[in-house]
Amino acid sequence: MCRNIKMLFNFDPPVTDEEIHAASLQFVRKISGFNKPSKVNEQPFNEAIDAIAQISAKLLAALETTAEPRNREEEAAKAKARGALRFQN
Image (tube, rainbow, N blue to C red):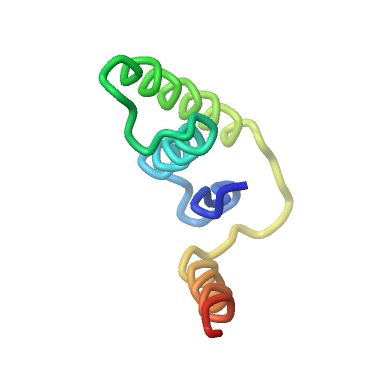
């Protein structure tokens, strides 16, 4: 899966609509192969982003867990450390 799509479930504070939209955009870019669609493909591209964002928000609202919410800063630090290890060579 695309590395730019971040896990959005079980965070404190909860995920924002902007984060859901950004993940949806990355997903549509990945499956379509377009970073920016042509004019003729722009409407279906944007409609797909909106549909996936809506479905993703519905999914996130329905999920349940007994696990403690993740801390955004801690998760960002872990991701940064993994990236540093990956690119240190």
